[in-house]
Each structure stands twice: as structure tokens, then as C-alpha cells.
Amino acid sequence: MKRVLITGVAGFVGRHFCKYFLDKKFEVIGIDNLKKFTGAINPKKKWPLYDPFDYENFKFIKMDCTDWFIHNREKKFDYVLHLAAIVGGREMIENYPLAVAQDLTIDSKFWEWCVTSKPKKVLYFSSSASYPLNLQTKKYYRLLKEEDINFNKVLGVPDYTYGWSKLTGEFLARIAYKNYEINSVCYRPFSGYGEDQDINYPFPNLCKNIINSTKKKTVHVWGDGKQMRDFIHIDDCVRGVTKTMDKINDASAINLSTGKFTSFIDFLKIGRTVSGNAFKIITQKSKPVGVFARAGSTHKQKKLGFKARITLEQGIERGLKYYENKIF
Image (tube, rainbow, N blue to C red):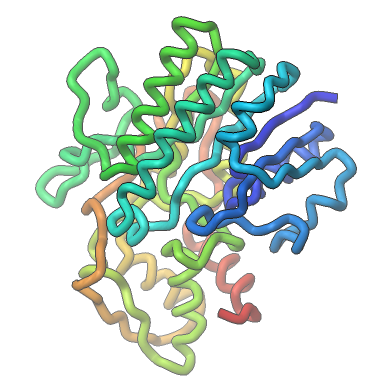
């Protein structure tokens, strides 16, 4: 039986990849400290979409992954998915930058462990926040291409401490490959979303507000709502990774994106159409909004055989159905 290690397994993204590998009959070893600001859900309480303990091939370790890296030197992993990170949405990134910077420690310990344990393949999850901010402004923006980050040239400034930590993680992946022959691929997800995502993220929060608009008749949006993102469903993220993970070994990066800019105002207009609720959109200009426009080129993905399938209309419809009977 093939074995996969998933750090941050109890988080939103980790839970979805865990199910994929469990269904493929891998032995899945999942590590998570279940701390606040990680979006983690204790698997013993059953995860929203499935119970991992229904699978005999699942093993959960409640532990800080940095401690596990120090004390465990297993060398029999076919894949390692490194998802452990301090996250939590825009407010977390801007209001607690030093807490988010702990990701630097997590990643440095991870790559040290890889050099010793030598897994067959590492899937490192970076972020679209690693892209230069000067390509995402109101005055100038375009689809972000993987080659916009070139470690052999002058690097642009990424998005706050989270962007810096992910950019550093990618650089460490390159060092691990060049100096220690650790095979890896780096993924840069854009605005991933899905039905069981933590409420601190835009998608579940907006779905909740759309549902509640039947009574309140209004939905609030941060900033002026004109800021744009590239929304990609978690099912497409899983497909994108699993279709490409064996095609790159040299720590090169791949976007996980749809190539479409969608403003939050347009997101809510789609929600209004899908739900049939005639709510008024209220802007909250005091709230943090991040960059003006962030979306990723899909050229490299398509060359590697992947294209996102789920439209934002379909994703919002799925989200509204899922959250309709949930208590917030």
C-alpha cells in the first residue's frame, strides 16, 4: 500500500486531499495540532463532509508538525503534502502579521525533515499571495503567470508576511531539489473555496449573508466591492494537483486558478440571481480588502492537462444548498 503524509490534514484543504487519497486506497497519515487560526476541525468530532475514521487506512496524529519533524525520521512516504500553516483570512494576515510569520519556522523545519527522510515526492502548497504586488494594482493588473516569480532575477514584493513566508518556502524547495535531490512541485492556489470552508473566509461568509438576506434584505461587502479575485472550487484544486503532481520534480510552480477576474460585487450579483433574493448590496469601506486584482494564468495548467470545470455560478449554488440548513 502506498503511503502519503498530510500536514495540516484537519484544515479545509487538507480534509479534501485526505479523502482523495483514502478513496485511492493510500495509507494516509495526517498531522495537525488543531490550533486556532488554522481552520482545523478535530477528526474525532467527524468532519463536515465525511468521517475519516470510516476508513481503515487513516491514521491521525494530534501534534505540532514541527515537533513531529524533529522526532520522526520515517523514510517510506510516496507523497508528502505540506499544508500546515497559520492562516485565517484577510484580517488575520493584516492584524497578526507576526503570528502568520510563524509559517517560516514551519517550512524551514519541514524542508530539513525532507532532506533527512527523503520522501519520493513533495507537494508544497504555496499561495498566490507570493506574487508581486505591483502586478495587482488598480492602475495595472493582469493574469499572474508562474514565471512572474523568478529566483534568478530581482523579486517583487509579495503580499505581507504570509506572501513572504510562502515565497521563502518555494525558494527552500528549489534548494532541496538542487542540493539534495528532493523531488517536489509547488502549487499556488488562488481564491479557493468550497462548502465546508471556515466561516472566516469570504465564500462561506457571503453565502451565509445571502441566505440571511431573506430577512435582512441587505448583504454587506468589504471595501467598495470592486476588488477582484480568481475563485476556484476546492474540487478543481484537488483535480488540478492530482493530474499534475507526477509531471514536475524540480520544485517549479503551478497556478491553481480559473483565469477569471470576479469582483465581490459581481460575486453577490451572481448570488442574487442563483438565490432569487432581491437584496441590496452595502459596502463597508473601513474593512481591509487586500490587493485590487488577483487572478492566475491557466496556460501552464492546460499544457499539463488540467482545466477547472466548476463555474462560480455552480459553486455558489452548491454553497447555498449546503449552508441553507446550517446554524451560524
